[in-house]
Image (tube, rainbow, N blue to C red; front, side, top):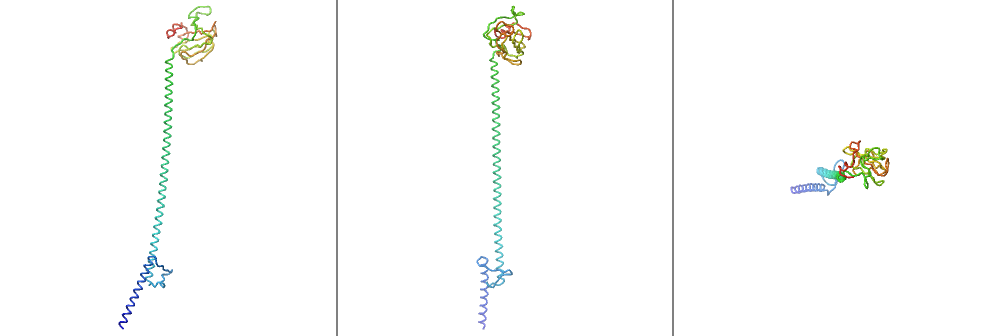
Length: 279
């Protein structure tokens, strides 16, 4: 009898251990995702698994933990994706900003180069204009230096009357020198000065008067034409008219007078020689 009871207890303990082992195996398998269990709205069904209520609760808790772990993993993945997207957007904005900065810098550099080129061209143009102006002034100075200070009033001439010469052709003694030459021969200013008269003057015909730097006035009469006007500046040798026969004359010539005070004529011959020419 005692032996029978010992066998019954051993059998009961073996059954209990098998039940616990089956429950532990099922829980482990559920945790690893290899066994599916069905949960009802009000609790966990144990009819098809042979689990005790405590084992079913443990299994449910494991499933909840597993779901929470999966949810956290998904959240972490979503967060990582969002962070990666945000990083890409920041990188894109940074790249765009850098490109804009480079484009702006290039545009500024180009504008600076254009401005520098324009400034250089303007400076060169000014320098060239200044050089041309200086060259022109130098050429004019050279021409003035090379130009004669005094010339005779015409060319190809012969003297037909001298200063203070008496004769029936004049109301008084002759007041100048008569340079006879072919009709139309140019009549020239003997020195540089300003034209103060260019008009028809009675017996003198077409007459030009020039005032020179020292106040002396020279007069040219009987010309056929005028080549200057009042106010013109002339140099020695500038054409002021042409040999003619206007006024009181018997042949083509220019009547030349020298008036130191602008009023009273003097003998032109010594005056011309004193200035370097001999008629």
